Image 1 (cartoon, rainbow, N blue to C red):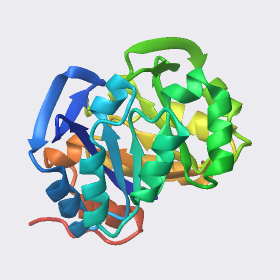
Image 2: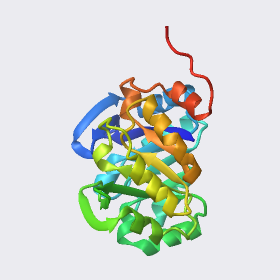
Image 3: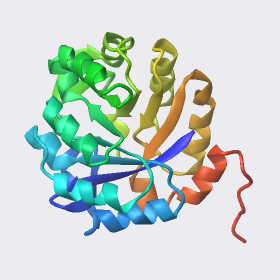
Image 4: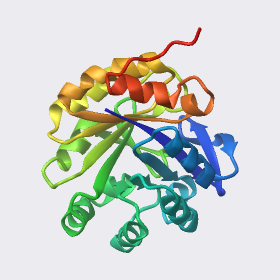
Length: 248
């Protein structure tokens, strides 16, 4: 299972939010490029980028910075935030992004997701962000009546690369991931799932590992890494079944 560091970009800075609230930001670096290099040098095999400004505005905002990040590291990058049309997808893929994440547009225009999967096979990830198991869109500001499972089943047979599932109430809170909801989703759709939201330390990584049998292939983590509560190298060792050296 992959441990995927998150780099959320707002106003050109590397930040983390609490429960997706744009007003609840903490700035962790003035250089997202340097942060990407740091996570790569610490052993990351994949990065999760979010254009928070793009998510709020419904269009790419930090495209040049994202291009710089992708060009600085030799590992694949998945990207979400403000991707609403094929022109944007194509531009990001040409810039070196490996996967684009579609969330809001998937809820509002399901046919577009099918078109994207047909046009860019293996490069489309579905983003399901949920509050109380109900899908939220538009940068998590608009709640819908659709459940996570309903959203996933809508797209389960069109060739998605994966589904990123985020429990919004746990995101950035360090309260532990929603193991049950993640397992339920993974068991009910034939698509790889990436867990997101709530990881607070190595014990949460260990709790997610058994879900690999149901098709959970990775976990995204941000605040715990930035605040030193989770060591990326140790988390990767745990996921690979390697012995972790305890500090004296």
